[in-house]
Image 1 (cartoon, rainbow, N blue to C red):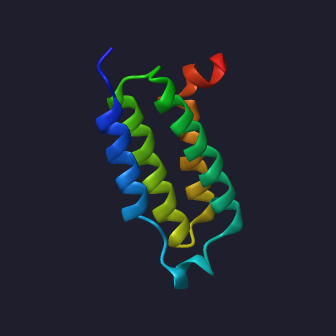
Image 2 (cartoon, rainbow, N blue to C red):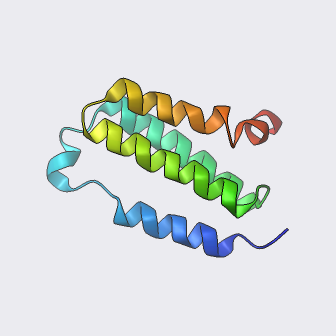
Image 3 (tube, rainbow, N blue to C red):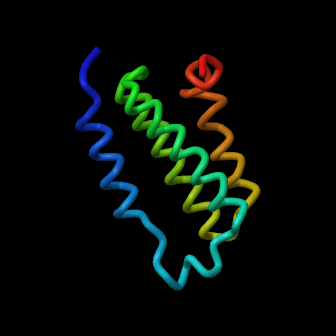
Length: 98
């Protein structure tokens, strides 16, 4: 399996680049924030284990970014559905193993 360290590093940079500003953080839905922490933590654990190809990890994180955007726009239901879709699609097999 190819090393996914460059992909993980890119994901970390995306996390910092896409972080919510201080003014937006006050209005960001709590449900979305909680789900974000859960999903990103699990993605990081899978990335550290290098148990999935980098392309799948990238796809999962891009879904997280879309979920964040939906939540930031006030579309909480859509955002939460996107967070849930990370585990139902690309990471589903990995999550069952853990």
